[in-house]
Image (cartoon, rainbow, N blue to C red):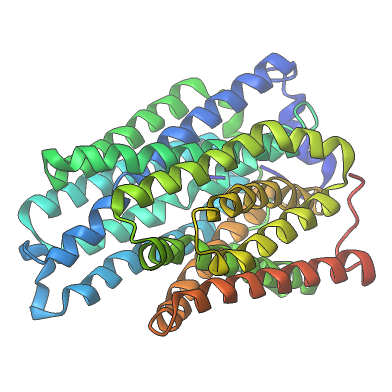
Length: 422
């Protein structure tokens, strides 16, 4: 899940609305958005622990469609979901700029609930086509992360957007921590129970969004830019920023997707060990977002902080493959910190630099680029890990360094992007 019009004064119309002119009302909006983010992301992450075992065992008819290899079917199921997010995030944020945040957020959350319900039905009847279609539908609706980020941006200056972004990110990390743990236990009641739980969590979020978020978030802006977020790529300076962001997200996703395999090969980890390593990593992200980012914000500009986060992540990832003892957990501390820092400040940097652009469209583009990075990392990393998974991790570090160098050159040398005051 992450209104904005064509000028700064228009952007502040929602803040000047009598319904939310005071700080208390702005905080209420942020808290509800954070709660919705936490529950929704937890619902998204619920199925993560069960898909790979389901298809690797190959016992269900769901995994035997057209006598195709179960590994190929798993790839389809895993790939069609981020494909849905790519398609959804490319237009959901832009639509919310024009027709209002609350309306789109509630509808897409309801759509996610329907998608997960269909997935549960497909699991019960072991229907692969329905299972794949429902995963695509769910992904389309869950491009709404861009709406949550846009709401966080819209609350500025009453609530500093850097702080808001960090809090939204920390709730997302919390969802990815709680979801897989809950899914791992719910699977004992049946595969479908995991998806019913995800559907219920999204339904609760839709109700919270519809009933608790103020009506002013339905404010429409007929002058907002229309079309897909991908149209932003026509602008050279934004295209340059999104290209470096693609390199960065590819680096991060190479880490996300292949550190479990590294732990298996290097330390003979079993799923429960990987789960707790993930809990440790996610906890480091949450603590950094909540406790460290506010300190960094007082001492560094957004450009400096964003660059710092990228460097910390890239350096830590370049060291990880060489560690042969459990001292590797130290790198997890810095990897989690680096991700939380760049997530909090690089997003804010873009938002501050382009305050005159629709924020839903900008945030939607970031989500789209992240999912593209996810897909590319899965393809490239899969090939490299056939030889040595360390190569995938080292490539992730290299790509992150390239992103950092590109950001440094673009901001400090060429001054490609509008220079934010922060």
